[in-house]
Length: 365
Image (tube, rainbow, N blue to C red; front, side):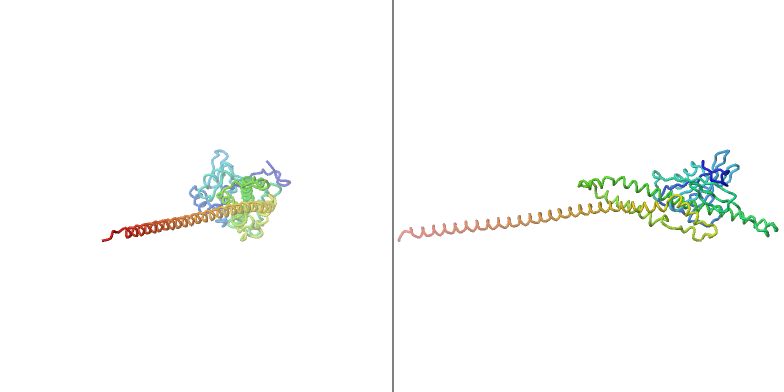
């Protein structure tokens, strides 16, 4: 287990883990499910719901039983954040509990779940009570938990209410810092899902360039080509349109206090996990995949055009056949009429000849 440097070496490292098992989460459904499971939603009233759902989970070290209110006798509470992007980020929560939450509890609220292709990423983090600000070094998050100094006036007056309010605000600030880091980690995990899906797309179309270079016929059906085109459009939309992957700053941080530096925490995770470079690379790969899809569509268009041409040829052939049959019938009828007329003429000639003969041989009175 990793430890942070210098002043945080004496602090035990814990784990923050992100899971992405769905294209999106219906946040309203998530809240209803968690309430029905007796979880407390947004326990410190950060006011960030429905942009993120926050619950606390703890596992008692003596009994091993998870506490849904985040309170145990000997165990420490962990935080779980559920984002609309289909990601769940857990801080210091046992994997067995978070996995059950993702794969079972939240499944009814998932849109287009992909449990088989579920991505999981984790970082270490340490809580440093000697620092007010947080940062990330390597793959370790240093979470500053130093309380802000109480003013002399508050110390003299001994106002318990103001001290309590200050402590509550300090907890909220720590939660907001966790949300900022969680949002950056969730972004990376969501991106990993798209990278895996694009890799699967390339695997299914890997033979196309080879077949084209050989001048071979592409043995793909219309349904296959349409399906692959739809898959690529869906991936590109998930990356650039329907998520905050390419946003420099998610909406969740626009109303946050500037002195908290939440956008800085979000950017630090992005830089540590090379999110910007990975997005650029993913878009470049999608451009190449788009070329493959264009070849498939052109092939589909050519094949469709060839079918139409043969259909037209067949229709013309049928029409020519009908016309030939009509002409043949007309010719046959004309021949029949000519034959009948010839027979009638012959009969009239014979009758006329017989009549002439009869008049010649008539006896005189």
